[in-house]
Structures are given as structure tokens and as C-alpha cells.
Amino acid sequence: GNLASSKAFSLWPLETAMCSSADTKGCDNGIHYAWPELGGSIRPTTDEATQNMIVDGIDCGKMSLEDALEGDMQVLVQAPSYLMVPKYMESNLRKGLQGAFLI
Image (cartoon, rainbow, N blue to C red):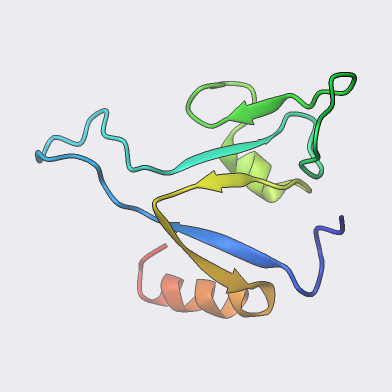
């Protein structure tokens, strides 16, 4: 697939802290990421062909999430809720959030 498709969307996970106390150390926010170790698209696997995946928070030191997001690869996201933003609107959203000091 073409990762630069005009019909592409980006997913913005919305954080939901799963903690009952003010101590957030070791707290799971419910958001997890995974991407192909060799980059590119995520593809179905068969018994003959496997695709090694890096899981954020488990495979520490192999590749950072920031590198994966900046590279030419698909990133899986698991989140309790998320916002789906059309690619053509993403730069305006980023500018608005940066102006509001949210990112």
C-alpha cells in the first residue's frame, strides 16, 4: 500500500489514565504501539513468511516510537479511544495544538 495516500488518516490516541491514585509511576494509560522491525507496511503473515514486530514498552532499545513515526512505516495503535484525523487536516491540527501549548 501507498503510505502517502490522499485518503490516509492519522490516529491520535486519547489518553485515559488507568490509575486510582495520584501516584502515576508504573501507571498504564491504555495506549500501546507496534510496528514492523524492518519498516514498511504491516502485512499478513504465513507459516513461511513472518514479520518481526517491535512493541513499544516491551522491545526497549531496538527502535524508538519517535523513529518509527518519522520513518516510512505503518504503526499499529491500541487505545481505549482515539481521534481519526484526515491527513489534509493534520498540519492545521498540529498548529492549533502547538499554539495552545498542548504539544
